Amino acid sequence: MIGVAVWPGDHNASSAAAADLGNPKWIWIAHIVAGALSLASVFLAQRTARSGLPKILLMVAGALLLVGFVMTMLAGSSGPRSWLALLLPGLLLLAAAFGVGPMPRNLDTHTR
Image (cartoon, rainbow, N blue to C red; front, top):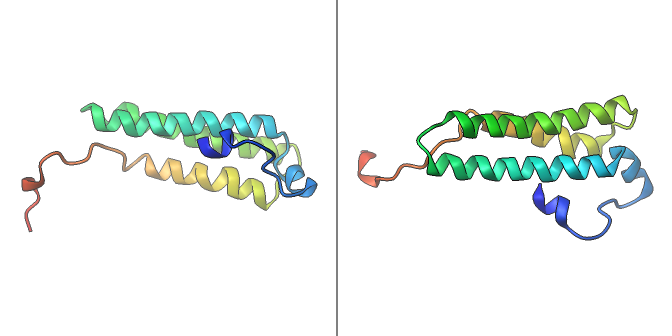
């Protein structure tokens, strides 16, 4: 999501694609904030023993994308591009929030 937000140039293939997303400025902000929160969540999950804060950050990132999707729907410009750019990543981040946690440190703890 951060890559989509910081890539230079216009991301829309046509004016119809641009109309699909509504206000591209708000979509850009949603992508950059959700991407930063997602990276922070994974980083914190690896560095701390707490699993609450990384999960909350990932849920906030997913909710932010879903709010952006709802805003595009309320603006009357909800097409396939907004479904793929906002709804799908938002749902995937919410689902991933339940599985975020530290990687096992000791490989000997896993027995076959």
